[in-house]
Length: 239
Ligand SMILES: [Zn+2]
Image 1 (cartoon, rainbow, N blue to C red):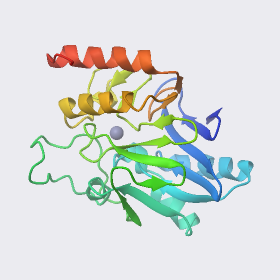
Image 2: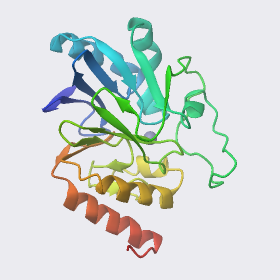
Image 3: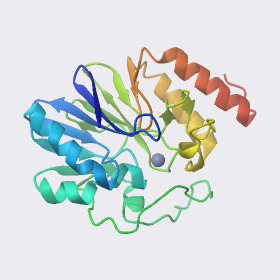
Image 4: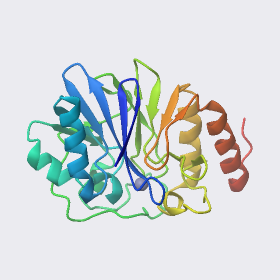
């Protein structure tokens, strides 16, 4: 496992060269917030890193309900009974193994691995604008119907889950990247993902931190060119 730091944010990465999977620890006044719970084998490294930082994990926040983001959730919750679990109201259904669509949603099948055996249920169902410590929750649907991103109000760093990927190249969720097409293949609705990518760019992030790939400082240009590419592939004119 590899660790990189940007101010209050620690990026934990497994298999960085082949199939990178990231989780994040965010320093808060009362402890650490874990963003995403990786795969089953990630629990140990997450707990060891928190121990090295000398702070308790008080919150577990999930960007979306895919298996490579919730894999270690049950083990972590068992070992961290005090930690509160947060996910968007919409993706709480995915966390419960339910891929069905809601009326009013684009009727495209939810893609990607949605495990059916996760026992943990969220303590807090998130909505747009909610605060979790220093983080603001932002709806960023597309990869899944209830995907959320989180911006650190202290630094402007944006933790965007799979709304973007940065491995191999920076791309909007849904754009196939040669050598690492998996996030695109697991994307529910590309048009929504493009709208979300634009919305996230407008938050003027100082850092882009995603589920798969390295953190990018001053990411505006990389995000803009990823958006332009996604728009071109979808045949959309950008305003
Ligand atoms: Zn995903």
